[in-house]
Length: 190
Image (cartoon, rainbow, N blue to C red; front, side, top):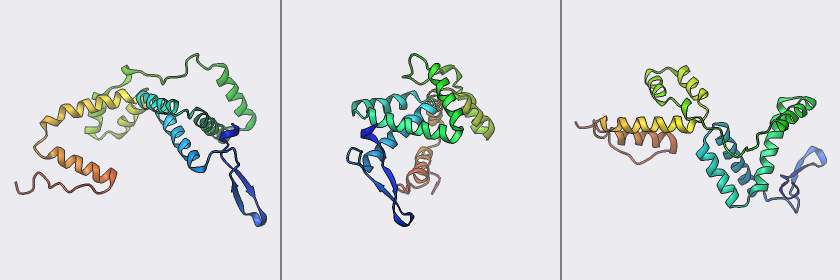
């Protein structure tokens, strides 16, 4: 961990906190980049997204950033344990986890059978928010659920009136990436 220590906070005179970067530490930009990699890996693992997990892990391995990301993952886990448990209890939890670690921990659990995209589409169409949340939460690997949802949307696209797809994609662009190119509504003038 010596070459990946984040930075030391030193309290100076008058209670001023100064961050001191040690010679053997990563620069702040590299730490932020490693934090982003660790967060991406954790999100993919937490949500059972095998493809995103594998992709993030492959990038880390290709760029030989194992040590940085491993350190940050350990730091995040230690912070979570520290905030969730009293010190003695946290140690017991970690010891119990260490004892029952599976032999192969490289992959996210995948369960294609629990992904019911048809029920998800029906629940969304009916506006049943609780059912949508329940379906997503009950799906071990959301990759298959989202894949099924995309397949369902693709099957519906040919039935949309001309211009509707352009309107929908323009609206999505406006919502998620700021203002996109203006596309006239299909119904205008018709």
